[in-house]
Image 1 (cartoon, one colour):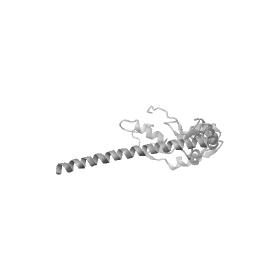
Image 2 (cartoon, rainbow, N blue to C red; image 1 turned 135 degrees about the vertical axis):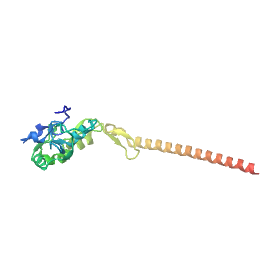
Image 3 (cartoon, one colour; image 1 turned 90 degrees about the vertical axis):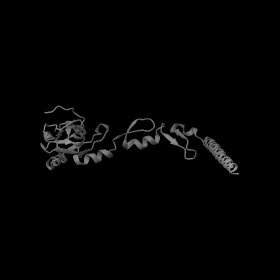
Image 4 (cartoon, helix red, strand yellow; image 1 turned 90 degrees about the horizontal axis):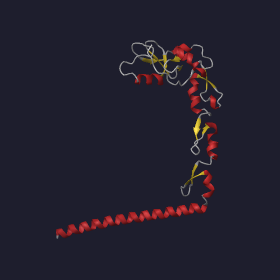
Length: 209
């Protein structure tokens, strides 16, 4: 059999509670349960779709099957394999974070996308928080950035008391002055450009006369 590098499986075998026919269901590229399974038309062995796509990109010429078929020709996974896969009971990949759910193979992806125990990163302190506690954490994290609705100043939550009404008004006054200065600058530039155009026209008229 052709030698190949094992990839990290999306669905390791030890997450399956009722695995009885591993030889039929395991992707030999990653040694995990075939995920989004496809098969080789010649030998009908199942593989994870991500695994076989990576496998194909690493073959320079003829794409051979990981099981040494003369050529890998992709086909849909046989219905009998799909049926067995759908009978599997699988623990959530976020079990170590506290999720106690056990799902059928065909419901696993939907659950894990919305699992309350997925880790999310706080925008303030960069701490990893499970999804179901994330909103409460960010609502209280002292390092989360806040934006003043009036002056648009950005500050961290622990600095909120320092951004008083007077401070806010001072910032708005400074912003107003900056806008006025910019408008005056724009006006002067336009006036200068207009004066240059007038001078050019006067020179043209003088030449015509």
